[in-house]
Amino acid sequence: MDLKDLYQEIILDHGKNPRNLGKFDNYNKDAKGNNPLCGDNVHVYLRLNENKKVEDIAFEGHGCAISMASASIMTDMVRGKEEKEVKEIVSDFLGMIKEKDSLVTNILKDDEKTKLMSLSGVKQYPMRVKCATLSWHTLTSALDNSDQIVKTEE
Amino acid sequence: MNIDDIKREFPIFDDKIQNNDLVYLDSANSSQKPRVVVDRIYDFYSKEFSNVGRSVHYLAVAATNLYEQTRVSVQKYINAKDKDEIVFTKGATEAINLVANTFGQKYLSEGDEVLLTELEHHSNYVPWHFLRKAKNIKIEFAEINDDGEVTLEAIEKKITNKTKIISVSHLSNVTGAILPIKEIVKLAHSKNIPVLIDGCQGAPHLKLDMQDIDCDFYAISGHKMYGPTGIGVLYAKKKWLEDLPPYQGGGGMINEVKKEGITYGELPNKYEAGTMATAQVIAFNESIKFMEKIGIQNIEKHEKELLDYGLEKLRKNNSVNIIGNPKEKGGVISFTIEGVHPHDIATILDEDGVAIRAGHHCCQILHDKLNLPATARASFGVYNTKDDIDKLDEAINKCKKIFNL
Image 1 (cartoon, one colour):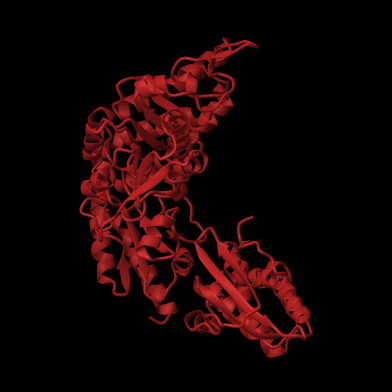
Image 2: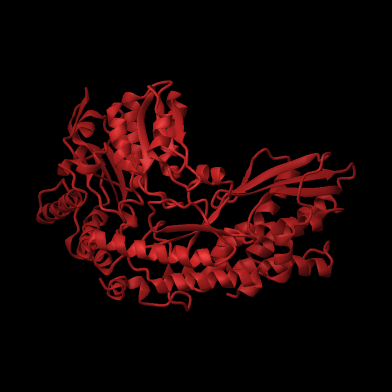
């Protein structure tokens, strides 16, 4: 294990200055997620337009560098994408965190994949995987209009 | 007392953990186990095992005697009047649930108040919340002050003529505050209110004398007292155990069972339904003996020295913010580092073998009050040394470096 894999420069940057932090008025989908283990929580807001495209996305919440960076990078990455593309990216990301070595989706450009792969360091820290995945599960829940609050503990 | 010798009695420190010497600063969560406890479990299962209190064969009688010996050891250790006042449970959580359930059943009804404090662990809140849901009782919280203490006055302020029981922590697992439990009990009794003390953090670190404290109930966790998991103790005054209904039903707790009705067993069997954690109870006797051999006053003194050293060291470390400043404080230091989330602190410290806890420590009410979602916590046990605190301090500096502080 190497801390440098976990706390890469990009993670520290997004963790410290998360992009898309806050809430905007005309969102039409949202969902909450929390991690009962540590009390971290996230609330994802997004606006899908008539073409099912993510017009805007933001999040509120607090958490560790990993969870804040993950939500920050995620929101950056899915803005402007269509709903089904977003779902493919989410499933690719979660698959990579769980078992695969790399991202396989064609939707993301190489530099975007590199950015997302910066979160792969958590694979060496099983207790921290949930920090990286919470906002992604919450995004899925928002898209599916689920009323259930996403919990990392099942 | 020689800490190096004491540390050698704990097998966990024999080998490196992830290539590091273990700096274990998570004893408020659960303590490590001395060899005598580990060996006792092995020996009991390999040479002496039988269920207790039922059969008459040799092994059953011997196991029953061992099991009852722990009861007497606990009674003496906490200076309870009678061995029947010691009920074994699966932990302090079950001990509190037992009281909330049985006392609630018999004595609480709509509008009655249970008085807790803002310091309480979830295990001393959720069981009372069940009663709030089931019986529409009210739960009041005595407030903490700026130093993270709950004073006698704070308790007094919340007592009303509806208060039916007071349930408070002996020692906070977050701020380390030691509550004035003897005075709280005296005040409560003057108003005819019984008191339960959550002694999870008190029992491993402070001298206990039930007859002196005079509380009605005291909950103890075995695994925080260098004992096995799955074992706890409820101390309760005999009058309560005789008066309250049984908690769980099953084998062992009955007197006579007929189709028309059932009578319950004598104390302490009345509260020990089903096969108990026999091996753990028997091994818990070794934990008590281990602590007695060192002497609780020596443990207290050692941990106080560590605490003073740790507080001094961490206060000098800028950007470290220590949570609470109680005048009477046990060996717990909760802290935050400006700009680093406690979970990141815990992961980075772990890389150097420094094991701490991060999160809300099962005290969300307290963390809400402090307006902090989480804190990092270093807590001490008898095996810790000043060197451990130096390593903690160094690891914190590494943390600051990674986060460019």
